Image (cartoon, rainbow, N blue to C red; front, side, top):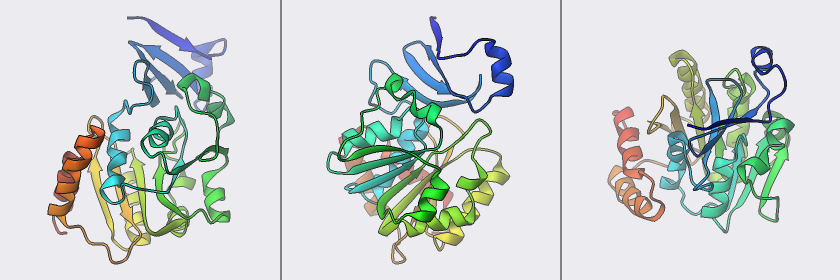
Length: 259
């Protein structure tokens, strides 16, 4: 196995011990990854298929298509290696893709991960997502939350006020998708906050290949899941995108037996 560690400073081990928020690029077995430490992978790209979704949790986040498969504006919090941003840019050619990233050092690695240059419908914005959403009126159809640092999910991206600003920045039929990872207590707190902000219109699914939990929150007050219809749509989307949408529907329903 060939391993390459790119963009690393001198005294690498010592640097890792004291600088967990500094990204570096790790390449092995045909997969290039962004990491903040030796164990946690922030993003991965298979070199032979750079615009596909390598990690199962990113595939699960595409479950928003069960609610809206023709979005006009997708807002993504957290660039990482750009997996979600690139995929949405290619798969939804009529949608605007806006990505918020707080770390200039992460943005500086965009060429390593073949992230497209900004154009009329694709933008990477250097910004604190919490402040940006508090001070703007984005009106997105979809918001994808995947913002993590070396310590995990930042408090500023999981507070009640942040989720409320996400709700405000969604259109009337908008969908928020949140990647949740951490202790069961931490995940439970986030789910309860989302449930409160989105008036209990919240469903969740486990990732295909990890402990990540993906939460789907719907803004529309009149929405109610019709499971047979969602299952039919999942099969159509699975054929179109080669993603396991039926598994997501089954997992969502199993995790919400009272609905």
